[in-house]
Image (cartoon, rainbow over all chains, first blue to last red; front, side, top):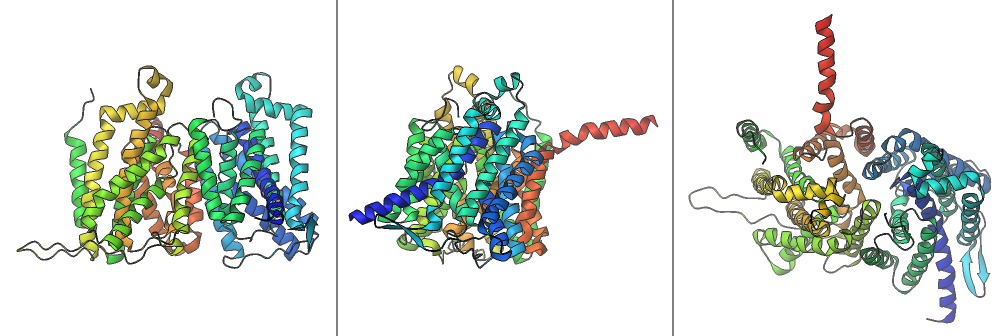
Length: 289
Length: 328
């Protein structure tokens, strides 16, 4: 392929990587801290996108306001589900997973029946036009996920390493029992992790809503890749999730350019299976995953 | 070793089998179809439990079942195989698929197992979607014929295109499958499987090869899933990749979570419960999955052992209530 196409693929790779990274990092955080396999993650994203549709397209408020509202709504939803459902199932990963699948049904059906199936909800890109970087063109709305992702993940990293509460979160993730012995309340940590991660999912859904078609089932499209990334990177490892997002995001972009996106997903799944067969804890995971 | 109370459970079993032999004659064609599907789903739920006894919630199970359905449909369409030949061969082929999948899966645990199995299932399913030949792409395969009729001299021809004969065909396959799976569950092998689920470190220390037995359970479970796929494919007459997607998979998980998984009867109870619930909720239309989700979460929160644990949960309360009544 020509040099222009290579460059275009590189840009696409970064965009794909960061859209996955924001979701994967949040998921890895809640798995590490709360031992919670939230399979309804794609539906959290969907709720974020629907919030933007309602606030921005229907309500006519500025896009930035819509993103903030989506962050609060989905963050709040994460906190509520943690308090009402997941807290009571802590320690049984299969049960949390099952409850999350129940949540998938509830969220999909509720959204579909309230606001209708069929046509996708239109969300116009707030910044029209596209950006030209050395001959490659990328829509502004797609590009914006890169700085937003860097800001969010950078902010999370800073919070986890420089704040007392962030350190407490990491301690719980490393060894919940030892952390509890130091006076760190595991339930409180799980609530905070769930709130932050869900807010991430809300923002991701908001930023991606003009690019993806907004339907009640948009979550299932994204979720497979995000889960593959989390497992590939090492369950519960935030650094691993980030690394895996970049590796698989680029791979996905390259294969999508050369062949198509279905084959890209299949190959990602096979790579994950092959890696896990030899390294069950994933790229950067700890011994027991 | 284990002692069976021979008379009581067997009497109940005979009544149940007699009931299921009589019941289709009193049902409309539609409900006979529902009953046929129910029997297939019972095999599916129990084959899922067989894998689960070694500790893995295998999210590829629905797709593995689809492998059986696709194999049989393709053999019948392109090679003119009869149904009676594809039924066992499809089981063996899906067992082989299971063997391949079990290599990476047997080493994964918990979260990785869930997602690993889901991702590999999706990889297979997406390839059906992608390949126009032989899988028919998103449209799938249509016009899968019912089994050819049996004509036994002296008796009327048994035409499996009709609802009742196909029901009995499925019932027969189900009884044989359940008998085999029940024997496995009660055998030394079944005990070994369960020891891996409950005490994997201990099991390994007494010389049980965890990976080997997990793989064995996976292969046996996949075999029966393949059989279910053949029965379902030839029953509906058409299959496509969406049939084996996430939605129905969640229902399969719900059967087991709601019914309970510690006993052999738990998944059967759960499956029957959900199929009856689905029929009862038919007026709700598209809202139905929302109710399933609520039922599933409710059971997980308030009945951690599922419906099968209900008697044990209720019994002490009833006893307490009875004592209080006696006192007053």
